[in-house]
Image 1 (cartoon, rainbow, N blue to C red):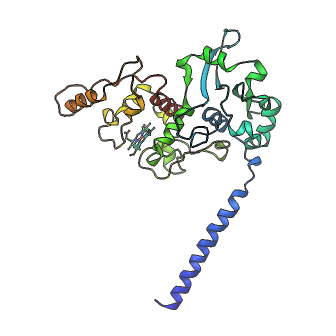
Image 2 (image 1 turned 45 degrees about the vertical axis):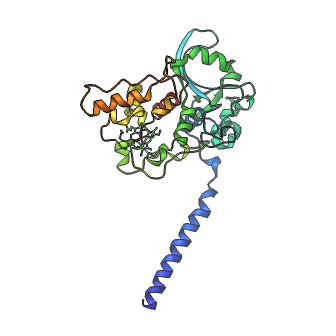
Image 3 (image 1 turned 90 degrees about the vertical axis):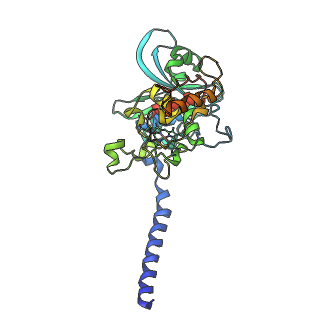
Amino acid sequence: MKFREYKIGARFFALALGGSMTITLLMPSFDINNVTATEVALDKQLWAGHESGFSLEDPFLTGLHKPVKVLLKNDPKTGQPMEPTTAYVYEAGTTFPGGILHPDNLGAIVKQLSLDRGHINEANKDQGAVFLVKPDEQKHYYIENATATMGWTPDAVLKTAGDANTQHAAYGKTVFVREGCWWCHTLLPEQTQDWQVFGAPPMLGDFNGESPTAFGSDRKAPDLLHVGSRNSSKEWMMLHFFNPRLVQPHSIMPRFDYLWGPVDAKGQKIDFDKWRAEYNEYREGKRVTAPDVPMYASNSDARALIDFVLTLK
Ligand code: HEC
């Protein structure tokens, strides 16, 4: 090798190293106070809760103590019909998300509104709380503690909404992290042709208070950030998670039938061996239709995962 070439190479290397070190050292100096949490960030941190990855409260990622997102069609105090309202229910003992614990995360304007109008600092973990996302006159979204402002208790809200209007999305995100869906899927469309296929890339303020972000590292499968807007069918998700080949014959996605647990929605034991045998007959052309997929129990991992996926709008 000629000496001159070596010197040019060394200079390029130094430039690349210096450049990347500058970025690494300067990027964290972004002031979070200046990044206003968007409506997306407020919604996301309230449904996802404090931690949906590894945490000391739930070291085995079982989905313990997670908040739920509900759609209320009746006032939980009077029972009278009202405009459909999304509420986030934290039962007693469930840790609040970053934005409630450390309002600085919300950015200056949202922080002030959430404290002054939203009374978020009056929320008490031991009693639980119900939160809402509200806009002010200038369309700044902030968090309201409906337990303090309207006296809505977690129990009353859960009872009024009912199981059909309740989404266990935070528990589902924990299952997403635990099952390694992010080895194949991303939650981060980029500013390329992705935009047309998978929907808009997120904005900087969409992540305030979220932990973990579960972006994914490498994409072998479709981006899922907006999958609930492409496909909102619970039935399709149910078939696809039980065995992706039921709806996508050439899919490489693994089956997640074990997330159903031992019993179905009626409490009857699921016979996986029988299902498999019938499915194999179907593949060999000895049956006309594939065997029916059992309906999942409402407290199963499968239900939570489907709630999570359909929350990604
Ligand atoms: C080995 C890679 C792999 C893993 C792991 C994986 N998937 Fe997939 N997934 C795929 C592929 C490939 C597709 C596209 C073909 C299909 O629909 O099956 C897909 C499709 C999907 C779709 C439909 C996407 C759309 O655009 O309509 C959803 C939803 C989904 N996966 C969710 C999950 C979840 C949740 C997990 C974790 C429990 C998971 N996947 C794990 C490979 C994977």
